[in-house]
Image (cartoon, helix red, strand yellow):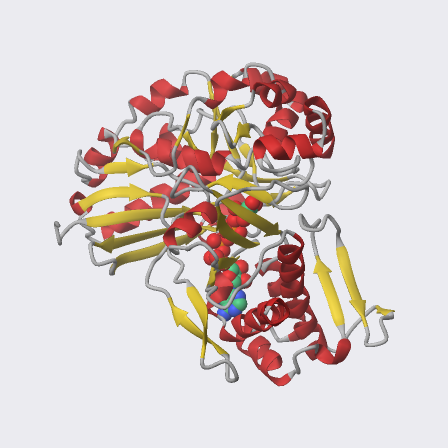
Length: 491
Ligand SMILES: Nc1ncnc2c1ncn2[C@@H]1O[C@H](COP(=O)(O)OP(=O)(O)O)[C@@H](O)[C@H]1O
Ligand SMILES: O=C(CO)[C@@H](O)[C@H](O)COP(=O)(O)O
């Protein structure tokens, strides 16, 4: 074992780009992040995205991702970081996950929170990047003296990439489900019924609304394979797990499904390239990075994958465990062997053992919704938000709320819905009731949807939490109260 070797990970998430370097002992030797809104204001994003006038279309500028990478690598260089020590790199994030475990005898069972030593890989899922014809040549011969956002500025036929928050492709979803014989048939093949944010439907919209740009594009990458391409200096293949979030990949055969491809856009197979297992080594870093930053020419680049599959791998989830990610989106996922694709939720190919699978539920109104209520009800302070959670009773004296600031994925609704203890709809709650109603409503939804899909929390189950809000003990407390309720029911 080379004790001096370092491993580098990047997390292209919705709101920021993060980097982390660890040594062989998994000790963090470098960490940094570029916040898109704050550090790159010239792109005018809010929360890293542009919400268009229809409120359904959501995109991020592809040049912003490039500039963020230039910026983070330049800062590392300026800090004296020794790139030549890096043995391998991938899409690795920096969350410090927590996990909860039941402790105590049968009568005195309690949940205890531990910080988990492992960190995870992460690239926001479903977003797509459209490389203009002849860009491969540019990527193959990047001039070391130029930053990526300059060298590649003319390489994209679509400058605003559709991302996971987009829900503007309902028509394309109907068309895809109809073409394949219905929502359940599509779910059986690709792991999910048609979802607006899934990349096949996004590509179908691009083809319909921007046919010229579509025809001028020679390769379509996911954000994960786009990021890997920047390191290998060539088009990187899409990995199985992130590829499962496209409504295009047959998750059993692990090949593109021709009927799905044809229903979305012509010539799509060539534009997508091949698919590979998520742990594949794609090659070494390109000479651009060797010359510009001093990487070793032997530094391996491992396939980048989506944030949720990467979290499953990085958190070392075992069968029976359940993971909750509280990032921009909230997700709940677990490792499964025998998938039964349903009309709710998703089945992805497992990033660790590609013969296995992972099941995932995604909730769009996660951290940004919590931030909104924090700003309105607790003076924009997480501490005050936590105080309120601590000083209000579990169950909220019967007050219940469902908070969907933007069109939710699970379930597909929008709006704020509050009910008092008599089950009457009300238009507002006192501030402390509002805070608890939000958190209880969010976690109750997770429990109900997980139960509906047949997931059980057993006595040996570990509940792992990751993502920005997992640093908040009071939010975690409520998470396990809600999941424990299920535990009591299943005992
Ligand atoms: N103390 C806290 N309590 C609750 N939420 C927090 C706290 N600190 C950060 N967050 C939330 O974490 C979110 C970012 O999570 P992160 O996992 O980094 O997101 P992403 O990877 O999607 O960019 C922020 O939007 C913020 O609302
Ligand atoms: O759409 C999904 C999963 O299907 C989201 O979970 C995205 O992958 C966004 O990730 P974050 O930026 O919230 O981490």
